[in-house]
Length: 395
Image (cartoon, rainbow, N blue to C red; front, side, top):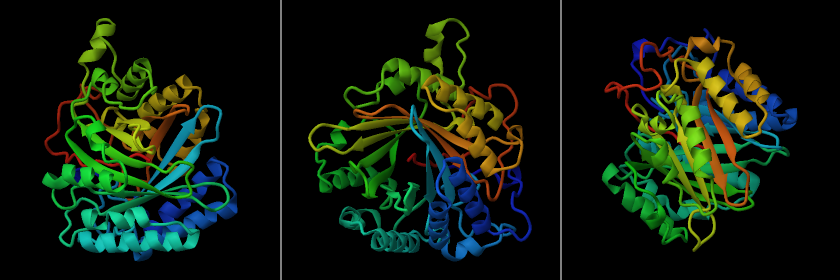
């Protein structure tokens, strides 16, 4: 997520349309794309509206209630489509339930209330979250977020639930200490030492509720990443091959070697940094999962190009490409060439003893459409001093 100059972002909402109208309609249409039953989709849609509270009734003709950093245009909702070979795609929705509150302490209280209401509804424990409350929710918490949640929308009306927390809540200088202590309290005392070096820790995430193997995930940011850098960042045994990681990196970033295969190695991501995610689920055996996230929207001219890259990757890994086309149509009626940001990130994920997964993160664009990037060097841009490089997670 990143804040763009207001003059570059024309309003996207129609007169009289509310935020709830917009994101609820998108969720219902996306549910049909992935084959969810209408009753399940309706339930998840109501959960989304309830968690947005009064913000759902706010007209899109007004600016966002607070500048949510969940998306570039401050929409407090984002969707994602997770694809695996020979399996149905999985739809997820990421939400900032405290989006009406600019004060992080108030936002945290609202978010915790939503998660505890879900725990009562679906009968799951919040013990792990409760054990971290003093670390992530201090009374003078700093931004850019307090708590986000993601729902993995499953058949049967019982979702998988993930909670995302801000390690810099007590200040950026405390982020490493907070991550280390959180891992210790959750039973992964050696986990911090198994993380790769990076520029910061934007998120810690917890799986709550019904999961076969719940995970604790730590996200690390990596400015100026190259393909070789990406290959060296996984700490998961028997994970993705270097060839898979390099192929994904270059396909998502859009790099073209000008003079032979060795030229791939000179490409670095100079705008928004990449993220890696390191999942812990088995104590004493190191990370069980690794995900590489490329912020594709900063390395394409427009969403037509981003869609082509995403579909090429899906095909390469033996996954259905048509579902992405249908999902994009469910989100918007605009032409893909008219903006850059509908596809925000592309991610390659591996979990021990599972097939690789490709995930496309899809923006709601309730408030604005980012204009296409133009001019030379779009796929190999220089840093932009006007662009605040806030980060968002993958699910």
